[in-house]
Amino acid sequence: MTGLIAIGAAMAVMTGVGAGIGIGIATSKATEAIARQPEAKGDINKALLLGCALAEATAIYGFVVAVLIVLFLK
Image (cartoon, rainbow, N blue to C red; front, side, top):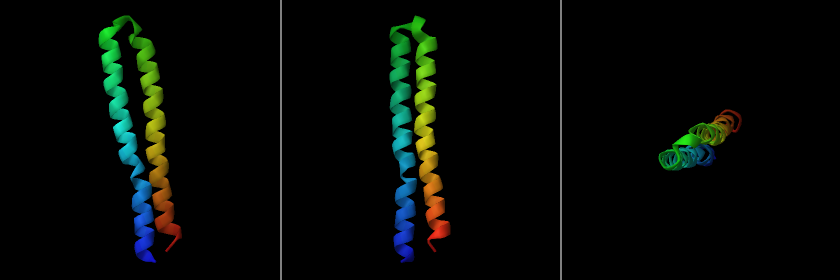
């Protein structure tokens, strides 16, 4: 049973990988957009920061779920 708990916690932490990939793609697209249209830099930065915050929150939720799995399902 302990092995399954560890596997479940590892799967919950893997949300960080998806968040990291998403933030990387969003940053690259924002950089391209700023290079093409420099006058829209402020709007692009606002949208980028909002998207990155939401993606990072997803990773944090995954980590919290993993910690809860480890602590309460022993």
